[in-house]
Length: 446
Image 1 (cartoon, rainbow, N blue to C red):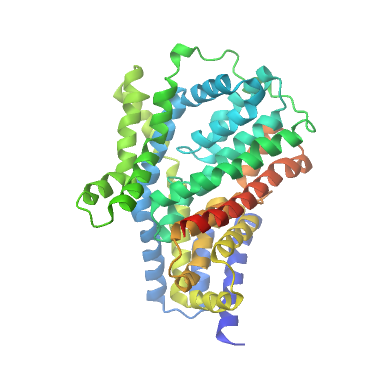
Image 2 (cartoon, helix red, strand yellow):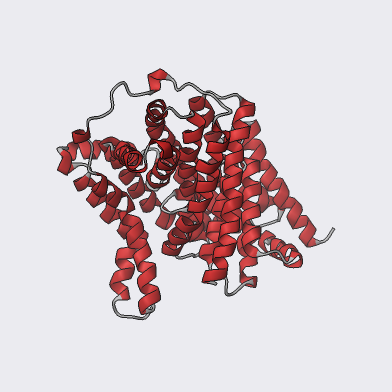
């Protein structure tokens, strides 16, 4: 058996080990990924000191920039949650678009609210609002619920500052501003087709009654909600700064003297820090809260980040040890013979990992390690396009090994079969539309 074949067998066993530990034995993803790191090191004969160094450097490389981004992003999301910003966005959009277009309004709410909050947090935050909107509009819960959930999931996978999307961008050395811009452009048609259009087609076939205990008895009075304009501006502010950096770089050139200041302001850490300051004022202090309350909200937002950071750090270690052990070269050798479009390859790898391990975060970051060895073959390829391709792949094929799948099932109260026909199918449609849109878009920007 040649070296390449041996290395690929080790890789398949490592991925199988991750799946076995996380799904069958319910081992925490952090421990499962570290177990895979040690397995790869031992199986490929890496010296012990090199193995430990790879784990250390891989974890540090991923978390060095990501930790402050996650913490600051979580605070912005928390401020939107406690201020009533999500309810304000939904109410205004439904009023503007009309009740007949409630499914489009809820997709936009999910798409915008999903920018600063995690997928599961977004579901918890928006579901009670969704139930009330469904009753008031007289529409199927599936018809307006699927659009909202797909909006949340799409930005969760492809738009920084979400953890996985940011980690992928960092792992690929991609410009985060470009990843945001490309992700928003590609994600919108994917969310639209898999959300409002698909949801309307299947909505009437599934009659669900929203749980009364999850519906607010009385809507929040308008005067207690933040203004629509300032809420929208606060949510989009960090993205505007990061995208502006990319635009100015294109217009002025990287060597322009002003780029020193533009790069600083448009850096994700700076942009999110300024966004936190803005959110503290617009959604907090300006609405009668004091700093003591804001401190408590900030602490409650940052706490849950620890587990996510550990998983992403361990994923970084796994990626690094694949490269240092020689498996990266084996992957490159095999994929060079396939001659597959690198964007399709990145999408397919992420989709396969999503189906295998369930969680989008693990799927995306593992996909980076599998795709990175091939990228030097395409010197003109923008890594931001590859990052979006990985994110698009991770949207699809959500099923029983995905925690988000059970979140949706619990809130919708649907049977397993019906959830496959609605939620799982909609995520897969979004994934396929996403890669098709990206391929077309790449023809323009390449």
